[in-house]
Amino acid sequence: MMSRLPEKIPFALEHFESLPDSADVRLPVLIGLYGCSAATIWRNVKSGRIPAPRKLSPGCTTWNVGELRAARDK
Image (cartoon, rainbow, N blue to C red):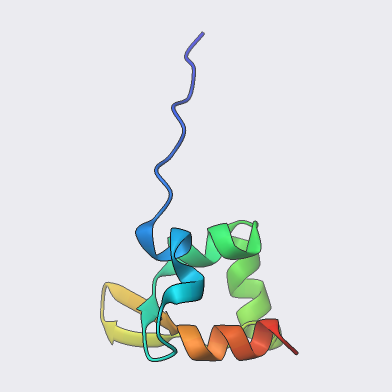
C-alpha cells in the first residue's frame, strides 16, 4: 500500500490575507482557499460565484486577489 505524502501548501495560500489586492494567484491557491476541486472552481466561475480569471499566456491563468476577496466578502 502506497501512502500519499501531504502536498506542500502554496506560499500565496499561506499568506493570502497579507497579499496586496493587486496580486494574482493561480488555480492551486483557489483549490486550497475554497476547499474544492478544480472542476468545482470552474463551475463556480461559470455561475459567477467566483470572479473570472485572467489569461496571462496560453499556459498561465490567474485570479486577482482583490476580486477574490470582494466575492468572498459578499
